[in-house]
Length: 309
Image 1: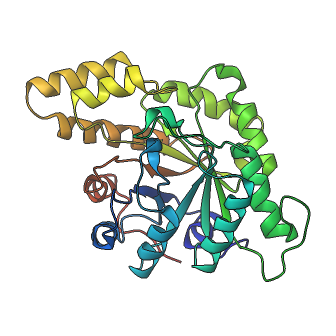
Image 2: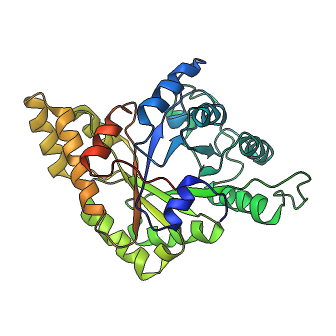
């Protein structure tokens, strides 16, 4: 056992895992986090605490993760390379571990030009693969990135990474996943899936390479809230693949004023399909700014109650 986290135990036991996102607020009110934790408790095995997602300033993922933990919910603390150099990253990792975090998701981070401070200077001292290597060295070798030894305990993290099965060039996406696994990724959360057929192609490459036996792959899903959200996903989010069929369904639902219902229905259909794909160990629900949809999705998908270990 690498971390002893609930998520790690479930995956090691062969249970189908459910994770979801819990976004910190754009302010210092901890009750926002506490209310979300109460609402989501029991509907997932661990919850991603996003790290200034889309380069928008929000409460620290580490601080919010501690609040979530105090509420009886297991956090997955996100750590991006955009805002920190390797010194600050390692310092924050030690702090997160000291505060009780057992899961960490390593991300390069959205470019600051997409956020609310586009004039900010991006750091990007390292990328996500190097970050994974740093976390693994801290945990397994008790070494800082510079080669010096830790003096007072190593952080026991279950190391996560993100992967996009749909980005170009498509034929190299499985190989890129292999690099993250080699670097030390214990689990993977994928980009949101709307094109299930293309995801199946990617998973076929992944399983042919035996990568599903070296890490746990959680398929990313998300409910579309509206026709506008679908359009934004299709045309403005890099690496997102939203088929025309999905767009047509959301268009029709908008006419009938039932966009949210159709978005949840599409999400449930994707969950049903990816559960049957070899190598998928769970799902990751990304209900952006719509966390209240998560309990409904988990219940309707037949994934409630969650099995604790």
